[in-house]
Length: 529
Image 1: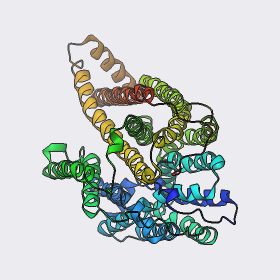
Image 2: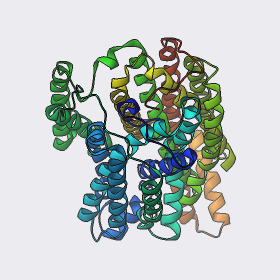
Image 3: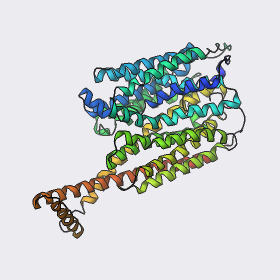
Image 4: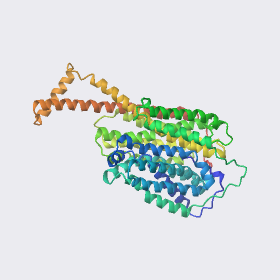
């Protein structure tokens, strides 16, 4: 439901001789692996850096390289699937992803690991787009909504499971298993896909323009790749204080400027940008941007909060997200049924309000909050996200010609991925700059003339003296303790600001949803999903 699905109507549906739910599970499992790898490596970066003797900054390219290659292959997936055959292309991508995952697990150094991550991103980025079309062929229209609820679990739950699984594997085994775990799952999926899935016949319409827009592909891929690099590396490289970020931004801007007139004037463009200018699809595109930002930002920064300020291990930080994942899985099927009876815009509005409520609850974060408070906030997000994801797909495809559904899916998938990168980058900057701001303001209160400061200093000095320290040692420890409290409080205040920002992003989906027109309910699902 989030990937660049290949137009199912471009091919005659194959004869399905096995239970289509088996196909759905296998396809969703393969897609789950790919989406999982967008987040599983994040918590393992310190372990990778330590194991390979590099800095965490250098190790962070393990994430960036995957995101960039994933974005680049996205736009070419439709053409390659039509040229090679959907089943063949899916198996090739799954094979590349599985083999490169194994190679990542045995990488002897960082350069080798980055190369294998690029290959992994290329395989994964090409695999997921085809999955929706496979499901569309396997299920009749009346069952497609439920089938794509299964697929939706992969898209929404996998980023949640990633930090939990990555944390546990890194804490208890080694970072290598964050990649090696894909091997048995991938081999199992390859065997089942090869056995149960039939290759659709080639399209009979010989008048179709199947020419490949090489220049359009180069421009779109360059734009998306450079944008991912800029967003992912900006903060660590000090944004425009870095010549590298200046260069990547310039490349991104030039590719974007050249891409628009080129794609707008092609008979068979790589990406049909006119769709983004339409009211229905344009609003859906922006809602998916916001949703992707919330999904990945909360997935990354909620575990970071509990590790940094509450002392959770990587495993327990990941477990904070787990109840939300369970709720999301249940809600996917609930919303799958609701979507047949309720207009998408009303479900999207409800989902945005639920997510906004969750973010608002987190603006009151403080040091005495327990595990379940954090988990409940994530559970609220787990209620809200399916209320947006499934309806937005139905809304986005409304009015799109059958021959354009693959391009519509590409754009929606790009919106989710790019929105996620924007969300992570935005929140990272809010946390960094607002923590500095709050810390400077708090330090202003720590003056010798402040009665409150002197009272706290005396009380803590007495406390440490009572622990058996000398007066001088106790005074030094008291000053250190006050400094730590200032830093912790500044961190809490910065997270509050970040949650306010995410709440506003969630609320921005409401006016966008109101612009969506009503669609026909209870009928056939769109061809691409």
